[in-house]
Image (cartoon, rainbow, N blue to C red; front, side, top):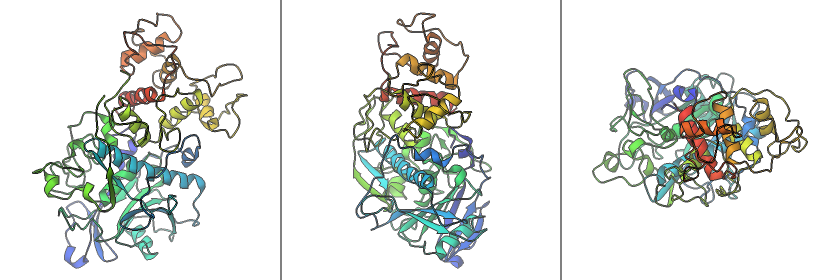
Length: 500
């Protein structure tokens, strides 16, 4: 599972064999640690502590855009995922931490939605526990010092406080640094009455250093709790993952694992199941492995709802649905918009909408870039612009942009946050992020003369293929860039510079 940041090379895994400890004794695969938790045996395969992210959880507290949780029923009935904050400190959940956990919950649903609509007319989406008025319910659990040193002790401590219901998968955001992510899965490929499907409580854990990655780690671990990846699946590794990249569940996870690239877009790192033949397909073909064996898409912890068939679609990308009501699967930018949403770069223009045809403002551009490359070196310099109020919706993003040297504003004392960004200005923003000083490529477009303002930046955009122009050999440098076009620009830049 190769992805943008190093953390996904250190995602942990636990394979659990639940049931009678006596019956399952010795059942752990070679190379796994067997641990007994409550009335079940689990098999652990932890990885090293990940490289810490410099992204604070306050990143998620921005109020510029909002995207809500998809809610079903009263929020309590039936099999559901339960978000839990686990700490050895005071049993208090701060506002930024609540926002971070909520964003992870939302993005897990977005990943499942995008994955479903890539191959089916239906979507299957995890049901989270929520209030009857659709607010995320996050349990707060305080455990004794040392209880989070390892996965088994953390599970035991949580279970002792009542987190042991078989109709719940407990997804634990922990204030700890022992793992990146780790989860439990029963080894059971049965098509029906599968032990991953409500036979026992499920547990996944994401330690704080890996909270900030837009749902990638959370979705990975949730998918383990739902039953992926079974050992007999066509491309399974011995350690519970898969070998056919690119895929949110695939990576070199232990000795002897060799991956191959079967799905060439690195954008698939945020999509479930490359070629949909190992663990997830909403409508598998008769005769396929998933048709006859356990399929995560059949989990009773997921809600199956009517969706829209996928389609494909120049500033465009082939379509994947994305969770926004105003961007259908037929949109040429659908895949890119879904990718940005899954990574937390966009939260929409309001609840359930992306506003694809609206021009990107300079304030929104600051927010996009801050969320897109938050670890880019930046000072704590205040924005210092008279038209950017302290505490305003983009104030922190604009200050970050100034501190990183990406902008000097639109004048000596102004930033012009509400002013639309032109396509030439967009080229300059991306150039300063990814290729400052590069002289690669000529202008490449008939309406951008050599030596014209931003000609170097536009030439770089053309040379890298990040821009394909506006048609008829032109770039339309003075035309405002739309939110949909911006999604495609960022998506292509990520494939070249972040996912390589």
